[in-house]
Length: 422
Image (spheres, rainbow, N blue to C red):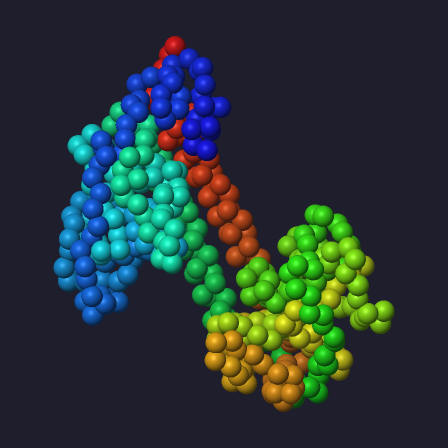
């Protein structure tokens, strides 16, 4: 793939030459990796010597493990994950640090910039050199035989500097998102517990059992084999699968007008004639999870309009028959506040945790008046909106970084000071 990209973008361009690694700028070199760096595993360290705080960072195969009082390296290096599903991940590390035996340390030769090498290795996707086994591991010998296109040192340094600008922007956005989420979580906990109330709201909250407000709408246990993507348009019946509640939908609600990842039933899959389809404000809750944190994961549906939607495999569908809750409020109450406190308490199981309708209807809810619910949902929704804007910006920055990475390290794009005048 790499050679194909370089060939199609650079073939027969003025100022480029054909090499074993593809078409590259004339002043660049085609080298094996072992000609520009060495690679060696870090030193063994026990978990007892790694702490949450300490003098020196300790890196393992998947990144920062913690801190230690000893260091193995001092300077600029490239760390590569050696084992596990993430083997081949690459990071540039500077300063004093301890590299464990699960990390491969690449030490660059004199005319090789370590930060540039890290970016080049990310582009090369080292995970493809992992050996198949129960515990995937990186074949260092294969990696060292890999060919790379090598600019002169000043251009290496300049390429690394440009890409680092994008990395700084990405890190800043990630930090802003993390802070926004932390602020929203604190606000949500105070609002949904009644510890913080908006001016003008002083009425007592109502304590009810869940079964006094919500009834169950029948869901349908269709496996993944019965579902397909909306793009195929095999039918017009959407299905909320429990796996998507755990892994796909990011927020407290799913807006069918915007969400494009909700699967639909394949043609030929039939529903009972008296199927009751879901409505705006219905809650779809996963009744099982392989990890404790996912017990009772829940989303609120809206934007259904004329669409036909059903609950899917391993889900409960809850509908407010008593009209005691406001649309937009329940998603926050159930997914991000209520389930964390109450649903775990009623879960059962060992390797798979589950909840039952019998126990669920007995759980107590503390409900503000409808107008206060609407005010709470509006504020939390606005906080989510701010986070979504930052996440879209982050995705754009990552796309731009990927574009620059793919083109700068192949020479398809040259920085102005290194362009030839031919």
